[in-house]
Amino acid sequence: MYSIGWFSTAKGPGSRNLLTAVQKSIESGEVKARISFAFVSREPGESTETDKFIELAGSYQIPVVCYSYKRYRRAHQKASEDETGFPEWRLGYDREVMRLLADFPKPDLNMLAGYMLIVGPEMCTRYNMVNLHPAAPDGPSGTWQEVIWHLINAGASSSGVMTHLVTPELDQGPVVSYCRFPIRHAYQFDQYWRDNEGLCSDDIKAGEGEHNRLFREIRRHGAVRELPLIVSTVKAFSDGILNISDGQIYDTQGVLTTGYDLSEQIDRLVKAELDGAA
Image (cartoon, rainbow, N blue to C red; front, side, top):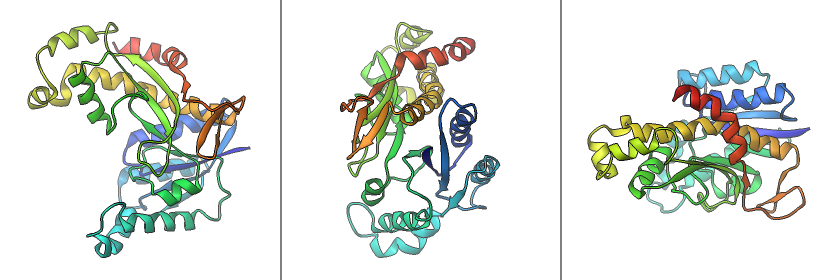
């Protein structure tokens, strides 16, 4: 059976929701796979939110491996604090993680779902790892907050959510899957753009900040698509629609792909939720 490794820092309910969404799709038979293990970059007692994640994974009978990156960093960072480039302590931490996971057969796919560490070149070379990014393939980089501020400054007409293969080149891995959605001429977007006419992101930050209605609406439309995009992506891999070979993504015909467009499918899945909250 297709096997999945799950990597998370488990900082909050979003991490639990991602795990639950995929696990429920497995239990229903929608996704023909199993989660072989969940790796958590914190240890029990570091955070009540992380403890809830560990308990949740255990309730699904998923083996959980924990290793605190904070504890490792405190013990090893000093020796490399003056070095440039990728910190030596991070490379060392990844090696310890790989050692801890060596007893598990290497999964077919590894999902980074709320994993707050940049994966070093050794680990992403060893494992097929896929990460979620809160923008379209040609969209801004950065956190979801940075993405939204960039979209507002640019007066963008659309945004999206994507997954990409993790490679040694940060955020430059091949696009795996994505969905796009309009941020004009739909729902209340045009009114919110008019409300912000003549303002740049710095003006909005100094005023309403993230409570700004345009900011919140862009985030709502992106966030609601993250769970179904991840589930649909995992399903595509487990069904053989997508495959990873030599650091590239191929379709079921063995043709190199520039990304699996799930926009229409995701729109159908989220329509009722978006309409109900509008």
